[in-house]
Each structure stands twice: as C-alpha cells, then as structure tokens.
Image (tube, rainbow, N blue to C red):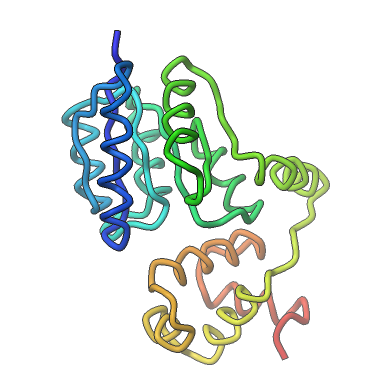
Length: 212
C-alpha cells in the first residue's frame, strides 16, 4: 500500500519543492497528495487530506514548520512529520523532536535521503540527520543537568539588536537574512535563556552578563 505524502517548503525554495515532489512521485511506494509554500495552507491541507507523512520546511510564511507540528500534536492528527531545516543547533533539534517530529533532516540532504526518510517514517521509524545526532544527545544531557548551551555568534548579534529595540524585520534587513530566520533565532534564544518573550530574554541575558 502506498504511503500518502504531502510536501510543504517555503516560497523562497519553490524550485526545491518542485524537484522534491518529482522525486517522490518517481517512487512507487508514495502517493503525493499535495504541496504548498505556505504554513497555514499546509496545516489546512493536512487536516483535510490526512496524509500518512507530511514533509515540513521549518521556515515558511504563515506558520513555521514547528508551529504546524505543534498544531498536529495538539489536534492529535495521525500524520507523521519529516522536518527540513537549515539549522543544526541542538536546541532547535531538541524542540522539534520534543514536539513530535518523526524525522529531522537538514535542507542540504539529497532527494534520495529525504525519500528514504519518508519511507522509514511511514513504517513508524524515527530518522535523524547524522549531523544532528551528537548535538541532540548533548542537549539532552545538558537539560538533564539543568544547563543551557551558549548562544551562537548569530544569536548574540540578534539578541544585541533586540535589546537595542530593533524589530525582527529591522534585524533581518540589517543582517541581510529573512525575517523568518530572525524569528527562528529568537525562539532559540528564548529557549536557551528560559524566557517566553523578548523583554524577559534581554533581562536574563543581562543577568548572565551576555549583554554589555
């Protein structure tokens, strides 16, 4: 029986999306039901089509991949998720796995690797990119001992600009990255500092001496 699959990749990667859909359709074990470049459309389609496996890009307009995953878990949908992300940060991977993703792959994974991961997930298996496995294990150990990993250089840059009052779009323009990427980094910063919003994160960072 074919695994019913849907694919969702951000608008900036439309060509990537089209290539991935073609690769999946070339495999007889998959039945590709639909695809989209918007997170809200992705969630609506998952609810309507009930695919066995959904491939989600972490950075999408509308809703981020992890937000779609949280909705899937909250609504107790049976769809399993393969997450594609540019990040190998252990906190990001930990949060994705904790939210319920069945596979976490980096965006530079080739199409054969992604297709194999979809097949494995459809069989009920869990797949993690080799590049993130050691970091995830370390993150689990750190959390077990109540620690938090240090902020990356990029996270420091974004935190400092947040503390100076810049918005996510302002930071994105200044650093020449997407607003969605800035928001992903901010979520990582909040996670690492145990904060729920930017004011608390800035206060905690100052308490720890991370901001001068």
